Length: 511
Image (cartoon, rainbow, N blue to C red; front, side):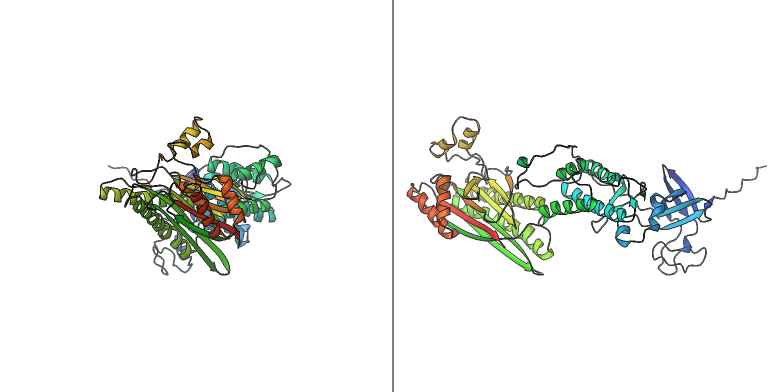
């Protein structure tokens, strides 16, 4: 005869409602045995006891699980969150589902949403946004006599609205005679982990700090470690400054000239240029973008000029379709990484256009390209070949791009001097160009412009004929950029005009 089966064990319910089904460190998982009391979907409390589906929204009620903490004594961690009433603070903290007491213990629950772990390391910009948000949270908590304590990467989540929110607040507690600046050190440790940034506490002398140096997250971490920043509100401002530096360029007005000439030796002008200035004022806020390109075609009659023209069209198509149009439509930010990517892809498509036409024709087509994509006071330079982009600052030219030429390689190897570049018999030998192969290596540079700066883009027909010092003098003598372009071409022709000559000169002024 079979033994009678044991009666199923009745689960022990916390506060008569929640069954604790799992415990991991200080985190518990609870199953709601009375889910009809409040619908998880629409929050209604009008369901009858035992309802399996919400009578208001139809959501299935059974099997709802929640994460939380059980605490005793003074509330800390999640148990402290319901005591916070400030909406700005609560926006950063886990949303509380329920808080119930059973004897001297308190159970605080949050929805058991599956974690979406951050993919580490984060980009610097992603970490800057998280750092800013957490510094804001610290400011709000400190004003209420609270501290978040140490925060781990697993405690973070990014909401669909791209805001930072904490999934856990193990260290949340009241400040009792403590030094709240310890929170800043916790934040520095977190950001180091998120970005894999090496720790450094080197103090900079004033002589080592330059206006051209782009501020980075490492600078902020250094300021925290050396206690140059001890207030989270000040830290918010530091993060805001760096975020703005990388995402919100200062608008600068541009005046440019552009000209090209066949020169005195060649029969055909194989160079091409493009100069585009776009200005937008929306809600009384100006934004400006510019695109400048110089391409020096190679391949002889009916080839070089085709190559340079195709390169311009390929690059312009990418910038218009994938950057300018969506940026203007959505009022998107001009992030440096995006600008770099667009400039690189623009040159890649330029190369693709030239390679495809070369295959169709069955002959060699090639062109150099130097491209400047400018958003406000940020310029991204893409370069292949020996056409050049210079920065003119305080009357002095500094070459941004780097020639992909035989003579530049010889200079790098120390076999010739920079001055011998201009007279070397193989000065026109280019080692890298568009159209040479499907995959081309592209140099990309970023410059932060100042009011009074200028960009000079030129084919080798200019810079081989006119030295940098002479170009500086000509530009200084011609404040109108179009007149300066004409004077530069005249100088190149006066020096022999051995090649086609193309130049774009863009002055940047306060908007």
